[in-house]
Length: 503
Image (cartoon, rainbow, N blue to C red):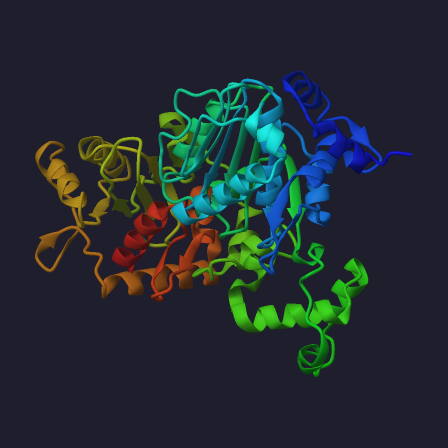
């Protein structure tokens, strides 16, 4: 009896174009070993092992589970080095070389990562049967990150997320976006352009390790179900190689098992070699262990990025947020406490350059006596538009004291408030209008905000503000800032308002 794997090998021996197309029509057929695509991948494709040897591709448990549950739209949250990018490359290459008119695009977070992905694809192709490479799969072009198969009118490209025009003007049948959580400030724009290029019958895979509770990938994971995406989560123990053996294991297992470790062993069937590996990871990675070697789809986001603010307090407050009593400007302006006669208010303003790209503008209105958040404006505005909106809010809230962060675009907003809007109740410090955010004032204002968040989180009503707090992390130099792909504009506007209230 001929095995399924033998069938895959026989199918490509001396293959002509007609046979290749017939193969493409049955890629999704199920076999006892899984999909026919998996059988073919394991029969045809070669990879470089961790020891540097060229070996047949054999799907690991995470790759097999992904293949079994894969849909048209997929999002993958995983521990590091689970082989998902390699498997998606294999999956999409087989579609590219067996289905005419197929364009596959893989997008990596850095140039180095893109080149690594392309090397894997190039290795797949270079190790195909010679008669295929000389015939149906003859290539007309193979530059640094592109392969064209003219007989099929198909193409395979690998690009970087830094190109915000990636995918423009194309029709992409297979799209793989790798390490989306690390794409940078324009992730939403880049991803929107790429997805727009994929027709309804095309396939999309968004994949990444975690990078803080915020940013585009976190949002995509949270709303995957409503967007029609299949969620795939792969914890580190799905890789059998993640274990420590011998004397090193015995050294790491000197201390008694903790309750948490016992729970993992009981629930997931982990053994002492795996627990030893986990202890080594925690020793080496510290606070980033749960991000790099994810164990569940919640803690990896909570722990990653060394959050500056108390994430658990933020989560508690997010579960009990009040609804806004009024929305204006298509949701950009939210009001929770309307102005009351006889009360004083402070308006904190964080300005940006305007336009649809880059940072947002944010305006926070707080009650001077209680510190309660009353209103929030958040959106892309030019300095002139922001001054107009700020003056309007200031007048509505009893001629509130308006404190504009005077760095960068803040100078233009202040000029507009004075000259065009004739707004007089403006905060000044050291003889100058506006609030100065400097190396001295910035840490103090953020620490004050963090303290208020811990002692009385009920003062804050904005989901946008608290979600920014989740992704505000400690950088390598110790400085707090928004995680890659996230924003901190609502935070800075609130920090200005609280600093002015305190001082």
